[in-house]
Image 1 (cartoon, rainbow, N blue to C red):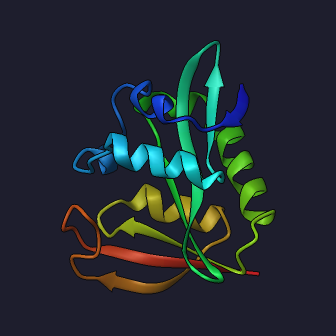
Image 2 (cartoon, helix red, strand yellow):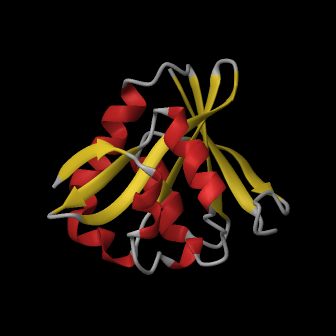
Length: 140
């Protein structure tokens, strides 16, 4: 497993995404903007993409953490989680937010494992998919 700077084409190489991403549109424009942010990485092994993750600036002093993970990511879940934590710890943003769908228990557990604390339990129709989310925060 290696972690490399994310490139837009990595987003099209992941295969079927975990269910929480099923309704999210990962567009070429979105991938290009994330690539341009310079804060995203790709988890790869032998040219196969096992996920992309990063932090995007929301506004000065606040970043938004995100990850797009294919179903096969669990094979390297520990290593990917450790790399995400390393990136969070090294972040330039003193406040990092993370949104997790209310109906995604594994995401809530993972957010806590990553060092986030729930700030808003129920943000109605918060996501681009129109679903309800919980907002987590990590403050350094």
